[in-house]
Length: 141
Image 1: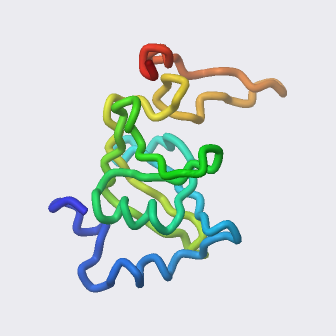
Image 2: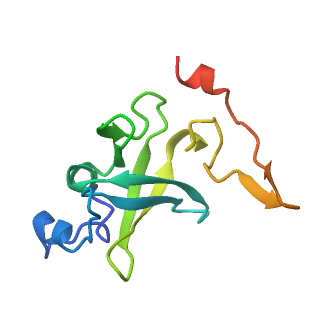
């Protein structure tokens, strides 16, 4: 991890020990929630496998596993909206990872919004509450 993220990657544990403490599901994946390190807003949920978590630990940038594409997904590789990891947490059961991130460009969602959680249940209907910051067609050319 980066030099200013001591709480993210302890020098007392090897990466293999860190990865061994995660409860991976039957597909070898763990849900990972990205949360803005400053505001606390939940930005997105994605999946990680051992390799993506290892790469995240090593590089300080969020790397996920794309189930639909069957490959690693480096957040921001096509949009430029990288996530710089400030802290990594593991829940009490060891089966969910929380990444506290600095979201580059202020957009985490492929729809061009700050957060993937832009729909709110209101009067028994899902309603879009958050605006599109940038047209996705302009992001993903």
